[in-house]
Structure formats: C-alpha cells, structure tokens
Image 1: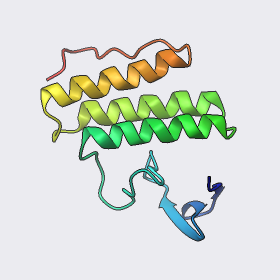
Image 2: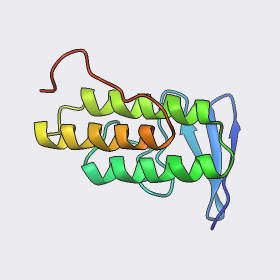
Image 3: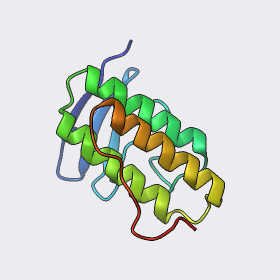
Image 4: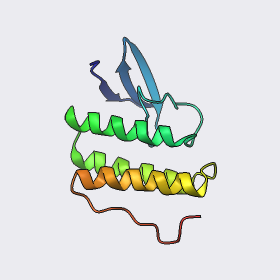
Length: 118
C-alpha cells in the first residue's frame, strides 16, 4: 500500500501519492485522494464518491491521522452531502446513513440535520 505524506505550504497542502506531488488548494476542505481525484470541481457527483471518501478516512485513521481530524472531516463530508443539489433525496439519505454508520464505528454520535432532508 502506498504511503502518503502531507505537507502544508503557503498555497495549500501538498501530498505525495504514487510517485508524484499533488497540490491541494487551501479552499478545498476535503481532499479525496486516491479514491476520487476531485481537485478541480467542487461538490460530489455520486454516492460512490462518498463511499470512497469514507474508505479513505478509515485508511487515514489506520495510518495515524488523529481521530479528531477524522471526526471533523466526516462532519465536512456530511455538510457537503446536505448542501449538494445534485443528490436526489434518496441518494442524500443513503449518504447520510453511510456517514453515520462510519461515525458509529468509531464511537461518535450520528449527525442529524436540523431540517428534514430535501
């Protein structure tokens, strides 16, 4: 399994993956890494991307990324799912369910929206 190193520079984060350097802009909250290369366009396209991000967060936790950081990233992902207009109501529900199942796995409370999912 390829190891990743992440450094923070003045223009954003720099990560080393599969023999090359990738710069992640500061404004991008979630870097999707090997699972999904979404460095340019903002937003999520599919439910499979949410699954891929969760898989990568699980891998990051196993490689020593702090659980506090993983917890924060799941919240960012959850907010992105809620705000993304391209998700259908059913996809949004499934994505929220996947995120909350991931959170339960680590012993964290599930996230609940203040308004019903639309």
